[in-house]
Image (tube, rainbow, N blue to C red; front, side, top):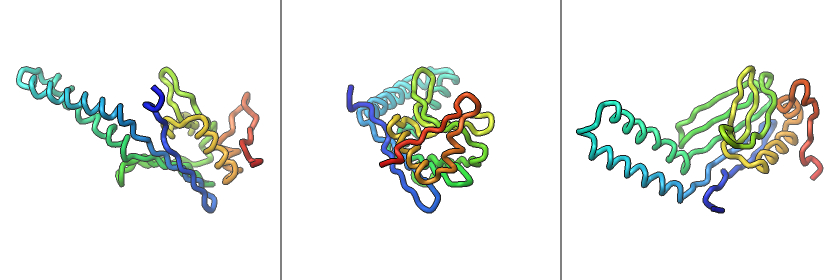
Length: 180
């Protein structure tokens, strides 16, 4: 199974008080082929059974076919850009010009960490913003997350101190790889 599931490609850039991380999924050709085959099969079944199907089943087929297309397209041409500066954390996720942008003030961000994926858990970065948890950097490995945190500490040490802070029981701040 090695080589079938690959993590994303990351690029880290720093300039004048800003850290920008671009996360691009690497196409998984085997999974894409399987999904494409499943899509064709579902379309064929829906076409053959359409006249005999009740309206709710038609709606389910249409929803399944239409909703999976953006996910497949994102695997080939999508990207996520994470920008951190002294004032805000910006997360852009999009496909060639169509993007969803979320911005959060650094004063509200805390507990930036990598979360290991598992049953019902997100694999990637997350931080607390106010009372909610914001998840980003889908499928980042621990190595990639450490590289991003190290770049953040080197580029914006004050922001890193603030955004990586934990209340109460987790008071220690660990400096990662600054002695290279």
